[in-house]
Image (cartoon, rainbow, N blue to C red):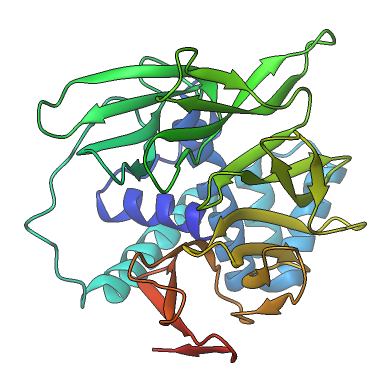
Length: 343
């Protein structure tokens, strides 16, 4: 997972890895607890690389059959100790990440826009104003996100909603903003539903779905429909909501546990780009706005996600779709009658 790798990489390069003792406890904020998991997963992978599957099996077998401490058990089984493995693992990470980032030049023009919580993310720029909508866990220990609108000139901000899911999205005319918000149902479960803020109406905020487990909405360029991801029984599908009739139609009909993410309309509304996770691999796909003609853009071991369309598009020109990957942004140029070409 590129996100987990990013967290581990940042902690390593900034000398903020949890110590050996701190790895053994929780009681931190949400990000700290996440780092316990990330470091533990990476450390176990290193232990397997060093001692092989047989060594790992021997350590686990020993822990299951006696009351020896981990230190004594590891020494008895593989002639190693946890603290020494931690030291070697940390040095291995530092070497690995320094080599991978040595060709990356820091951008001196980058500055923090906000630094409120430990999770300020998913910015969406207004097409008509110098404003940006984003989510933040400002004032929270865990990832309970609020939706904020920031004026980039005055730096003034206002909170638009609480308890939302990531990925808010502006309409192409900038007059509306859609997002997914979690609310408790009568059973105490938090279910995501689609909301819209329409600055052209007196009653600006409106709820569009109920109990839908919906997330990652995106408005069509003509403003008549919204695509979103619907979660049900552990699997997801991409759905289309007609704003006039409130009818919901499935664009994908997934019956297994394939997961879909971040569907996005092209600027002319004719295509949808999205990412799909299946069989341990996450790739990008493209389909027509009616759900037909699904084709893959990527098919590799990389973690391909978070695609977006170039704004330089007209119905008669070519379009570009881009996605952030580890250390890279890839672009595809779409011809009207042919497949993608990587540029």
